[in-house]
Image (cartoon, one colour):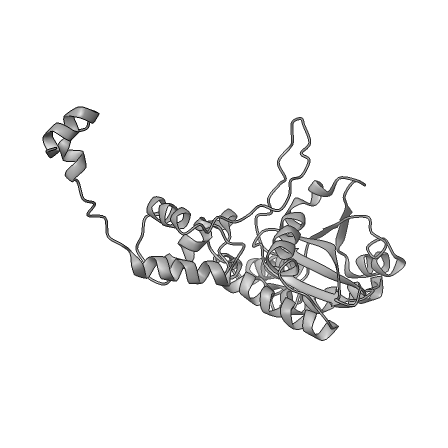
Length: 289
């Protein structure tokens, strides 16, 4: 049977039967995308797209999504969670660095069953991860010492937000907050989303690191956390700050650490002294005149 009669019998257009796709194979993009997906297993196609653009691959996000699905790289979602029903008030976003820090603890365990607790500290404005302190049982004194180190490095925050955990409500933290003149805000019990920035960060930390690795010692955990923190701050694109890294976004703000270290007493005269000098000069001018 000829092609014409076969197409007429099945009701198909001959142009469609003879059509051959001219779509390029995009082998280089595919191979690099697969390599990045294997390296960063919990990254979706949007973050992979930003990483490819950094490396110079000019590819449309819709085309990349098609290649992403053809390679079957879809990230598997871990379980579901209950969501509250009702209206929600959006959280106020700080306008500058060091306006508000968020603190929380993330729990994990070693391969031998021992408990591991990680103190997470972030800047709510720049989304920078300021600290990942790992220990078996950190106390309030250890948290206060870590905060002293952060303040010496980047200046004092205006406010710190945390839950009502035993480490944050201890006498050591209350004494530290009063001595450092830092406002400490406790969220309502049972309302973790009042501290939503740190909760979102903790989810990324658990999804991309804690669920992917097993720790056999505290030294190994500290090394892995330090490496992941450096990658999070300098390489990982963040969707809420224009797909920039936290360090790139923080660089758009003026440097404030120099202002914190500047002396409060300057060489300029006080306003009262300046006014008295003006009055004295004015009177002497009238007398001499």
